[in-house]
Amino acid sequence: MTDFRRDQIAKIHIQDLRLRTYIGINDDEKKNKQDVVINIRIHYHAERAVSFNVIDEALNYRTITKKVIKHVESNRFLLLERMTDEVLSLVMEHPQVMWADVMIDKPHALRFSDSVSIALSARREGYAGAAHPH
Image (cartoon, rainbow, N blue to C red; front, side):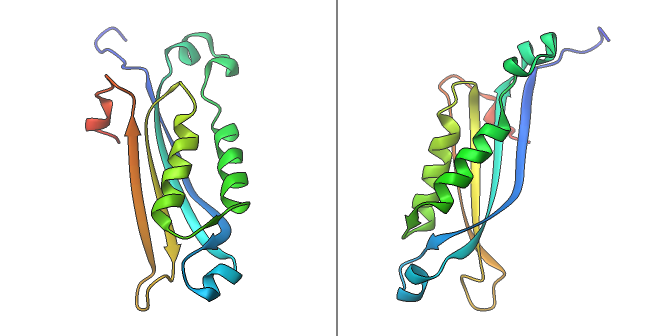
């Protein structure tokens, strides 16, 4: 095990979180909730979680997911860009998060298209791991 060095950067993927919310500028969109699909990728330093094997040292992705669900389902958004930015801000509130990428799909937003999506990302100053996010 000494032939390599672990970087201890945990990469969390919250995949295909399906929620319903008010999103859009048309009258029909303002009256009726629509489906959105949220994908979140997070990098955080996991040295202490790995070393001590204690949940309190890990980034609690369940807490983050609950905040996202509550925020998205209890608010109204005109633009997908705004919703994506607000979800990204919720994720980055956690000081352990070094980098995050949020992509939100709005299924059936365009005729002849499965969905339209917006992606935004953020990183802490000095974190270079986002150059190779996967």
